[in-house]
Length: 249
Image (tube, rainbow, N blue to C red; front, side, top):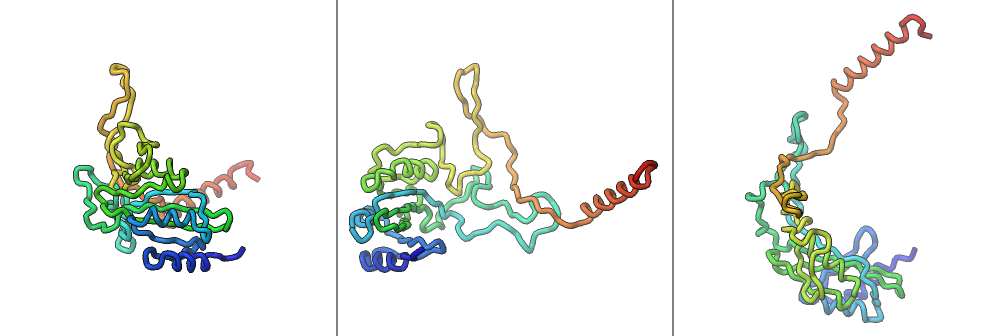
């Protein structure tokens, strides 16, 4: 397969100059980071310029960078026994809702990432931008440029709370109409706030506080310790007793 990523990166740099940041990736897809104020203009050039001809938007999603670069695993300081060993349990989503962490330290928290395809050039490019205000993230809608962005942007709005300015029908698409919050945000509690059930007396669905006790789950690790060695010894003793039993071959 011919690698065209270097040529495309050079063309993008020549076209947009310092307005965008062009970089590559391990998969060979060129990525350009666009300031949110230039989001629509750059998108239209990528679609209409004959050098690019990115006629199709194949995917669009939101990204929450809250807690980016932080880790909650204790690694070398962890003990070798006890529930939830090896994890601190203070990562994004694991907290009491009243004491949820603030995100004031996230300078660029919410990002929108879109993947474009040029059928005539047989090339792909990834474009991304960051919302200017993490408290109320707003990014211009790409629906007028690629109408396939319609439901993708509704999903990003529903899951991340990113508002796409200019979208013709921006409303929830995956959660219930009365749902509160945005499930893919890093500060959305993993244990949930409410549970849903159908109330026969009221004749409708009702929301109630969740009764599940929160806890941190960690992967199960099989270790070669005395517990498993004891099981092997018992099994070997049972096999030996069976072999010595009357009638055994």
